[in-house]
Picture (tube, rainbow, N blue to C red):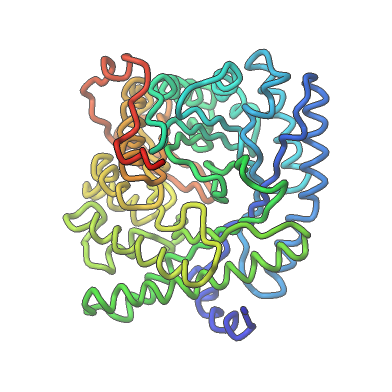
Length: 454
């Protein structure tokens, strides 16, 4: 059982080392909202979300106040909307109406993001899936709090290259639709492989069909805490270094467990999982890149970086699993460029490239995250990047993702400001050799041999 002594032990982490609960995310099933009438579907969605989540923000604020634990975000994830809207949506515009309804519900209950404007198309696309995907640029342009994710591959099914090719175009269109805001819409759109059903972090969160009617998932983050712990043992060998990370991750996860149990009890919604992900922010000292420097590389991107990240990710997972019976979601280390000041510094120093980031994603929690690229990057090149990252996830039986932002009107040497947790990013160069013939082939890349386990 968790006791207050464990909370007292974390006071220093909270006050001096940027420990926080990054998000309480309520997952809500909208399957029972489906109807052949679009208005009826929208009304049911709005009512269910605003009823179940009406006290989510207040509960998070109350827990933060009582226990002194910062809870940065309160969010909602819903059933992939391509499933819910399949009976009533005949055009992309119909899906945009659903997006507006979800955005209105999110504003009503006060959450900062609502995820699940999504489709799972790793093996093929239904007509409903295609309509939702085609609606994404407009939907993200006319809403403020909606996040969209498309799962295009899995270890079990392979990679749907038709969907990969389409998402290259959709990302470009989303950038154009939101060009007045530095193509911000793309920051709320992620393409995934092996997407988990219980991820509380945006933009990839959705409420999987295997989940209960409603669930509470909590995401904890503490890169600053890990960095501080490693600074105390600057010359330790790898055994002690790993043990220190593991013990620190254990303590961080216990904080999340406490918050999750309290939120679940007060809201009357079952507890789902704790996602222990070292998710950085632009704040100084809250950086995964700084942890890698503590481990011994001069800048992320230097030789040894991938090994250091693999070590970090593994020890974080080991510590988290010992601290909670329900560790899930992504859990590990995020390496977003714009949200991590240390990563930005590494790019500006010339140490970190997209190719090195891709290598690092083989061993981290997610993938190519919050990377700004020139606005004139071809859609086929973006599709090629997605295909590469999806292949890493498929072959390695892990979640990978691409959240890439072709900023209209910007090129290498420019910087783009997103604000808040999204931070700012230098425009990174992209390999200019063409992948068009590859991505235009269409069809599906088969699943790897080790996928056959029945």
